[in-house]
Image 1 (cartoon, one colour):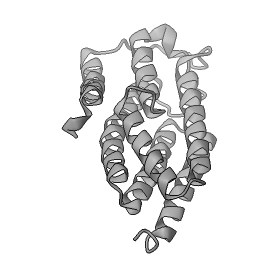
Image 2 (image 1 turned 90 degrees about the vertical axis):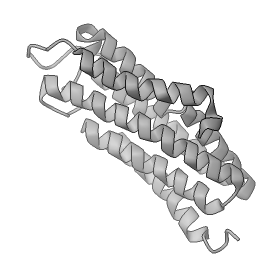
Image 3 (image 1 turned 30 degrees about the vertical axis):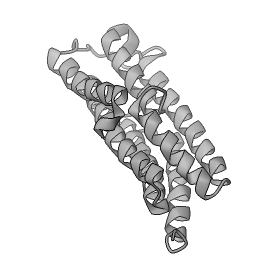
Image 4 (image 1 turned 90 degrees about the horizontal axis):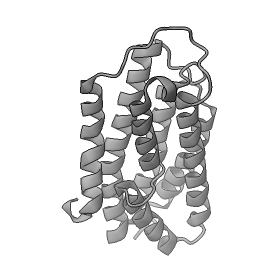
Length: 200
């Protein structure tokens, strides 16, 4: 049954890997997050095309989880843009000294982006990789490579925005309650769904 969709599965897995590699080259924070979403959706398309119960459940879980995660990352990118007036990674540095609470939000969101357990992202990716492995064992190589690259660019994004000494000599505004509320409204539902995945 999946033979008809074989070209689409191959294209989506290959496209996800290429999107991940593109993420490593990005200097713009929002572009990096956008390409990250493309790579995740490549895996979702592959899982849907395989047409197994695990694949469809994993695709649904990953779509919901990545919806929350990427939206939270875009919100965090906007908070840094409002203060630095730039999206260039090398210029958005040293936030851990100035806005320590935001650093915690960045860390949590990046951990969810790389699908660390017990997040919903992990559940979705585990179901997808299981269904893909049952369909064709060699896909584990591509999926493993994608996961490795995802971890690399997520770590790069976190370190670039939070660590090192700042190159900008501008006065930073403190974080507002609305910003913390906005991020917590992304993280908390995702954590609650992770604890009770049957809600999906």
